[in-house]
Image (cartoon, rainbow, N blue to C red; front, side):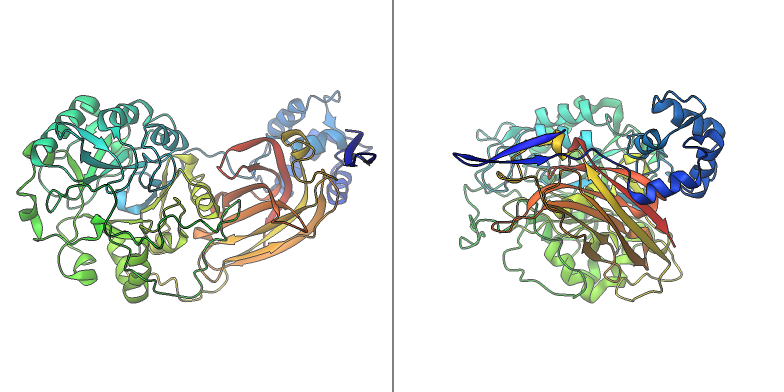
Length: 578
């Protein structure tokens, strides 16, 4: 990395000198504070770990491991170069490596669960292929709820998975089930829930029951016909598959194109930027237009209780581990808490946004015992997503997302489920489970803590991108956006200055974020390359749960739009709770 040449025209070239990564001034001062004669000894490094990194239990052995890891020739300590290498290395991540550490013995309703929507689609909601590949990818990432829409095949003698009433090409149900069995527990041992949107005749329901039973065998959780008084806990359901469905009101034929689609909306190009629209603001409550939101799951049951199940094949009925219901009577009936049984309720994004305005506290009360699933509105043809915080701050367990898409809302989903060892289950904060007082996210609470973030510098783009990727005529002009996604009072985004023509940007800027509900807060980090004439270029992103953020100076790896980790791109940052 000495010099780099950019062609400006046929006869003229610009040459830029490439800097060598160097420790920021703050790092140099800290090194001097904890070192003697240019060497930080084991004792000095241990004191640094305790006092600056806030690793209270750090031992001399921990310090020795760090010294050994940077492969420095001083066995008894490190010089500034090796110290900087440790700080900016993979052994110094921003999240604690705690594995699964939440209490996993509470009912399923006490957890946020990593939930997919239309998990079989490879792309948009109207014309993409259906496949088991996106299901496999979701399970590898740790997603714990897979949705399958099941329909009769063209000859009505077998079952396909497809987005009914669209031009999506089907995939056989049996192929999806086999892939779920193979990959269900690759990323996590905790239960996988398969939510079925069922459009089958009773004879095909019986066929599905046979497929499911033969495919999953003993790992299938079959509680029997009785309703649960309380959901079982994730710990007791390790390596189990759970079927959840709402018994169909009647068999509905699929049409080639949905009559209910608004043709003026269908096919409209997305206005998302390359990395996705900004996450929708939750500060102002609003009620959207519902006329296009006609998904089958929004329909009410014709009868309350078990009467609606008379058309079910008995073998199929016995498969259902989590029964979904939607009784007649609107929101008040849907959100009524039954002390003798629990259920799953599904609601579209638009219906939910309306419900939180009028029934916010009832939703929080309902989700203490029952499971609520919220899914994207039907006009999200491009497989985009909504702000998941609106669900989480009301206790919604299954905030269902189009995992095959990308964009800022999906990055928040990825960030939330980095918590608790990435097992796909995150214990809800106690205030969402408190029977004495119902949490109201609209009320501004006092500040609990303030997160102070220092953005020192970044590196790695030179190795992971072609030298003309960002700008054909010069090195990139990077800036960083950093902020909070959380309850409305906490949500904010700020940005550093733009540094011109530099592959190793060194911003050295400090930001403070007062947090009223840190338990639900996510730290958002994005790097962009400023472009005067066009949209700014994407340079990486990550989203980190505040609840597991490590204090101190940390190396923060960045990810692509799709959530794939870059090989080299990372930021050096400091996190302090004050």
